[in-house]
Length: 288
Image (cartoon, rainbow, N blue to C red; front, top):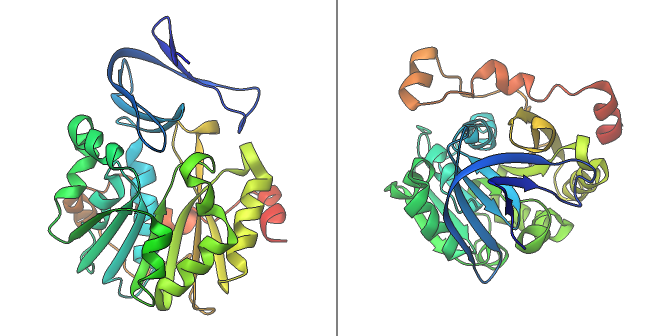
């Protein structure tokens, strides 16, 4: 299927029926198929470069930073001392770029199943893929499920940077996955996962939260604005093995100079707390 018609890419998906988001394309930088998914990298007229997997926009140069910063710093700043971190997915390198910035992180491992996404991100998306250059990082090409089965009680924080629940990412929203996360965490560990938005699929978000609650005593849902995502919003599931930890309050707070020095353009302590404040309709639907 030709994803680009008359110079425009349109994101049409059964996950959000009756609506589409379009980007005007200047140039196709790469188009191919890995063992797991279709990969398209383009240069757009207004949003810089964009990564598209299986016809779904994963990130654009224009607005990738809110997503990457929030999925990383929500769990890292909620944890009192996140020294050892695991990233599952995140083949574009954006989350690795952000994890490397946190002053408490001594080492982190990333497990990405699709080597071609890593390779082409390094080639065409260096603004994100520079995360792979961190000396703190151990990069593993493989299955996150199998990796966590062999690494029990090892990590302070685990971040799941997945695509939407189709294709190779579908298993990253199941109860069995949250059980693996629990077993791979140290006591009082925290997980953070991409969890979609109730504006497009309330039932999927409810199911993901329900699966997580079966294994974690403290579960929260946060939202972030990302203009090129469906309805301009994305959600994160943040959960802890500690029943008393307040995930909505950052343990570590950065002053404006520290934020600037770290290159953080979206995350700060007030937005950490604000991201967990939900509209009444969604708070009721997800937690009551």
